[in-house]
Image (cartoon, rainbow, N blue to C red; front, top):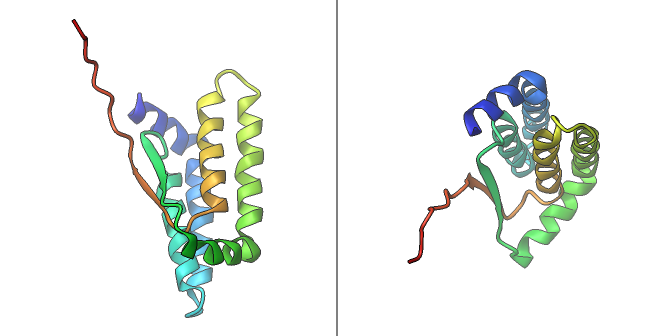
Length: 130
């Protein structure tokens, strides 16, 4: 299901979202000061390429709060609103619910990218207790 979801995601908007994040990352990396912010945009582009089967782990470290506030001021809030609006739009339809949930996951990451890592989702083992 993950592969099919990522293929459909790529066709119906994931490609454009990935391009958007790559462009933002390149523009931010033009200046030396913007390189850390640009690297976070590349993290978002990687997630936007294939979000199904991935989860975001937040470290909760206090030293990343300042970087996340700067990120919000430099455009993170606009990008998070973009993803949230797309997510809510997809959630209106029954078929779009999985895509809407992925956009909302990306909106949360767009709010707090520093201190977050994107990892493959752990597969749950089916164990039967006897």
